[in-house]
Length: 319
Length: 276
Image (cartoon, rainbow over all chains, first blue to last red; front, side, top):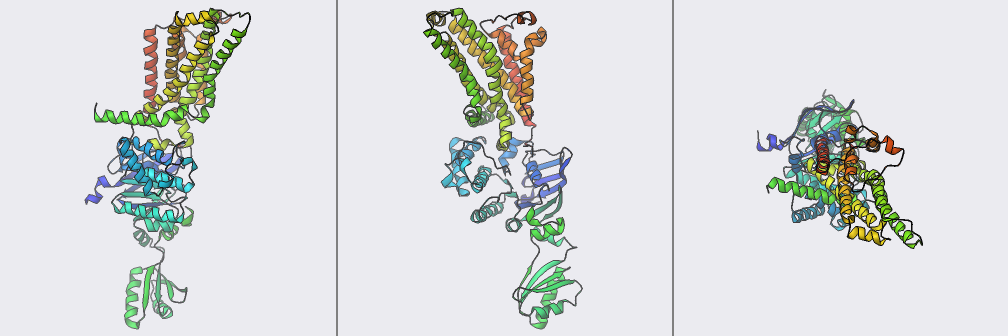
């Protein structure tokens, strides 16, 4: 086992179930999440927030065991040094400025006053809120509140950052900056575990996804890997070339081809196939034999939205 | 002092720092200010009106007994009881209603330290409101009378003031611990608070053994001036010997400590559920 994947760097769920009375939160979830950016995707009530609340110790599993970098979530004194959580709850304690909000909760980590002030300033700067740091949080817009909550979750430099819908309320510029920040943290070998309903952004952010439906994990892994496992759904591949009609005619003689459609400016051929590997080999052969000029070949449905629709049968954008 | 103890001390201080202002300067707590300020204003008016009266019918004894009655009936059974309910029950419940308690639960803070910090902040707020109120009322109620001044400064008055202030602090400690627990353990702390209120007020009519299971019976025994009961209450009420000071004070403190400890254990096993 590599150092990066030793138990002390992983977030693990072993047969974890959580019921709210008779209502299912999540059921028999077993996951091993390595460092990097991981997205939880699923419709409302699928169990995303429950999983996040479980791994941050806000709620306890009815069954099963969770370890966050080797620490059980029922030991908050150890866990909360490792974990930062930007929860879905919008409220922030009343009467505090942005700086005071972050500073006051940093004091609870046991840092000295100067250290808290330094960390608070750095965290605020990281989310681009320096100019508003002295204003009461109550006067912040939704997006500013989201950013200050994000800064608060990151201020103690946690190794595991858990974010419930972190892009909610952010304008496009702030979204782009925040996504870059998550990528930076993921690339540093930290865990960034987030849920988002903007699926094309999940594609951009994530190293891996966990798809949830009705409290069950329906798929997990790198997005392309998850897609390739959905065997019953033909893969869509977009080929841009100079003679798409000729190419379509050649392809139709093969049984793995399900459909071919010319699209856009007449140079795009959207191909649906049950065997992508055979298609790629076939394209090479066609190029060699006919001199076809291919500009690009790209999978057209290995994004989270498509996988999500295939697996869960719902519109991804409505999570 | 060990590193761990230093950390806990720092963390409790940090909780206290966040909480005391919320407890003492809350806009929602305006009625608690009113409970604390009300008797002071009444005593001031009493002193002013009596001093202007051509034939004041008040004696020193009336004022001393008047204050003792006000202290036992209004302060202990009313203002301090409900004031502590307002302050302590909202320490946890208020944050659950505002959905901000998770910020504490997401810090590496022992839940015991959180409970201790919140309790101390609530105690400071309650004492800061009611101890000066009791002192000011006692000083003002007879200020129209020179004899009262002698009673205060050259007689037993100051000693009695000290006892009243001590009983006020003990009441805040005792009721504070009760309502801190109610605020964490019950979704609607008003229900257990009402039960405690009924219990505390029917207490004098209960057998002597049951009377001992209440905050008020210990506090009443510590009050420096006894309030005679009017008929027919003097027949119905079961009179018991006051608990000796050396048992009443440590006993109350011990019960409060047990309740706070129980609250801390409950907080340790608690989850964040805002009822969604």
